[in-house]
Each structure stands twice: as C-alpha cells, then as structure tokens.
Image 1 (cartoon, rainbow, N blue to C red):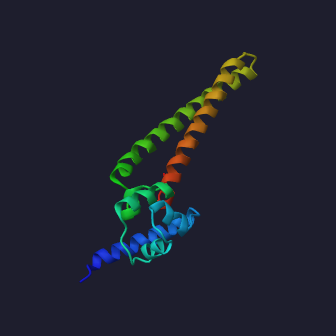
Image 2 (spheres, rainbow, N blue to C red):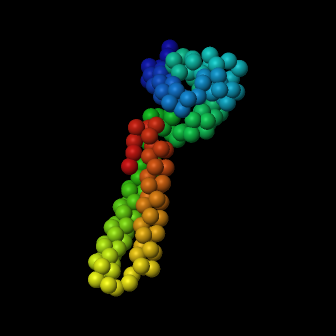
Image 3 (cartoon, helix red, strand yellow):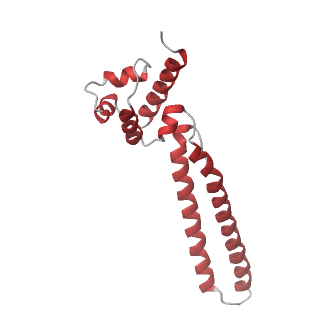
Length: 155
C-alpha cells in the first residue's frame, strides 16, 4: 500500500522540478544526462510524480539548476537561508545609511563650494565612494534575489 503523504510529496517535488527546469531553459534530455539516466522519460516520470528520485540525482539536479537542495526537496527555505536573511538585510540597511551620510556630506560641500571654497578633491572622493557602495549594494541584493527568486522569495 502506498503512503499518501509520500506520493503527494513526490508529486509536489515533480511539479517544482518541472517549473524550475522550464524556467531555467533546461530540457528533460539534458537533465536526464546530468542525472545519469538513459532516457529523458525518467525525468518525465519524476515530474509527473510517478518515480522516486535517487540522492545522487537530487544533487545533480540542484547543481545543474543552481538551486538550494533543501528547497528543491521540501519547497521551503533552508534554515541557513532563513537565519542569514536578517543579517543580509541589516547589512544592506547599514550600507544604505552610509550612502545617505555621504550624500549629505556631498550636499554640504557643494553649498560651501558655491560660496567659493574649494572642495573638489573631497567631492570626487565622496562621489566615488557613493558609486562604489551603491554598486556593491545593488550587486549583493541582485545576487541574493537571484538565488531566492526560484523559491518565490526576495529581500
């Protein structure tokens, strides 16, 4: 007798796999080859919930589709990702506050410069720091969101 929860889990896994595979533009054939299956129908059966997945295949799928293995199996964020999220969010908030401080300093220096004081060197430094911080914050946010996107999450 089949366990209802087990067959439901297999079907949900298959649905997640199908959506993710298609979103990544990976064919069943390519995924089959990566998993070491001889026929692409093996992936089709897994996606339909008609076949179990071996651990080695799970690892190959997660690597090829560049997805968190825990999410692939459960549909939930891993504990590590959940624990990391507030730290990343706090780090980004801190960096954005620094950018605001640099922008305030730049604004103050521009006022002084309009009154005849020369602050061109410091203004150049501040401009470079603002650009550097914005670029890094953007890259980090983009990287994290790209990793979280298949799981329907973002920061």
